Image 1: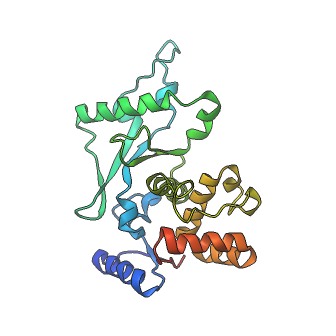
Image 2 (image 1 turned 135 degrees about the vertical axis):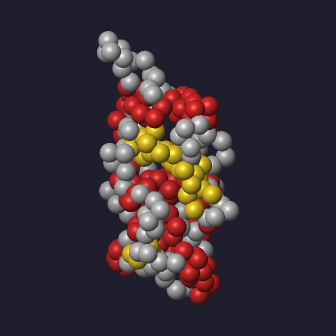
Length: 245
């Protein structure tokens, strides 16, 4: 369920109450963000705090593939050609804010960090990374994960999936968290994409829990391993919060 033009504080209180009462809050859209970020406000505050920057780019591989007038790769682009927008979490106002793209010095720092990481991606992985990805080791401040979204493919599904990776990087749900995220084998992955790796299955589970909660519950009734995953998301990751989606 998606609601528009609603009171922000009322919704935040609704979500806060839901953590205690177990009620299922509805997702909602604000008019402040583009469509692919429309569900950000509905996410738990402790999840939002793990976000570094959201980079909306012309293409995530544009730096890597940039060519001069002679067709030679030079790995250098006009900054405002590459970055369409850069968002970060503002905890004081509990919302996303935008980085000033007119700040040339700061933009150069972000660009240099981005270029350093993108150029390390192997050729075999570069095509897949052109859509969206999340990075912690090469994040701008090395503390919170950055999310890269290509403007030609940015959408809510991709964003929430990548935001699932942000949480996994922050809390190590896959390898170190107790109890560890239940992943028996790929045959019980939540989606086909989740079969690639347990980390991808976690991100897909995060996406389904937020955006397709009712569908995930239906899947859980038919598969006890997915039921364990649903219970894990509800109790460990979202602390009792469920979504009416």
